[in-house]
Image (cartoon, rainbow, N blue to C red; front, side, top):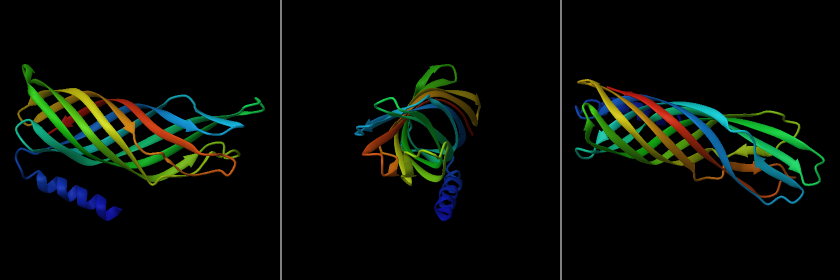
Length: 211
């Protein structure tokens, strides 16, 4: 894993030698929710309260044409997943939280428009983000739903935003995004829990600086 991360960083540094390639740092504030499919009869699993999930990403915009760019990089996100387990006969109700930390690797396409105002243009971004789990922790271990999470989570990113040119080599980006989870994050569950599928959805706001 550490060699893969090092390789990504080397690629970003080498591509900076191309005058058209831009590097940047992006901060994202996201709200996460879950799409849950539950086949349990006696115990129901539902999502709990939505959680705030910050992330940071170092990225590179690599030109494919004058307006299309391949955007990749490396980042970090901590996804807090809140679940509610309850018995059908109302005997108990337990709140569970899982904090899963990931290394993020986007592989997306970004389209820039012509200027819509002085030093301002719109951009649209779409594509997959590969999240590699590096650590996870649960609260209230007296009752466990998820014993082990998948080592990889893949989300499909949709972003729309505006880029504002601040200086000849510096620009700021502000955007809103939606990450749709494609993979059931549950690798192994407790024996008392039947088939369950949990997929993450994130809604966020991006603030980035490009140079």
